[in-house]
Length: 162
Image (cartoon, rainbow, N blue to C red):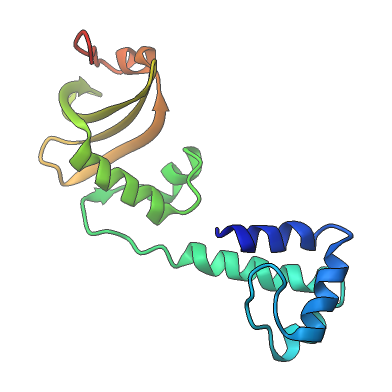
């Protein structure tokens, strides 16, 4: 979200939001984003909470507009995205697909099958981890913050110095 939009929403839910809404009604312009506000929304914004509904709807529309990259199948994508704190399933999917290209690949055995793990170090004991089928046609999971212990628990021992 752009900083002007965030400020507009943040101030909008505070007592100062009334002044910002009066400014918008008088000028037809959002004080923080310079966005033109016309018609119903220009005047209805004076009613407490109404301008925040308009702004919140724009945030939701922007989140829904995340295009999805082409790539492997990812079963229960929405469930994985929710469990791992992603803002939008498509953004989560896109991060996983990109990590298949950028992470270091390891082969490991998990749940009685060989899989590919794509791992990138992000801190002293923090890694981004994406698991996929050996053929690359299916993603099993993508997690942004796992530890060495988590990787060991699923059967991956990183080489010294990784």
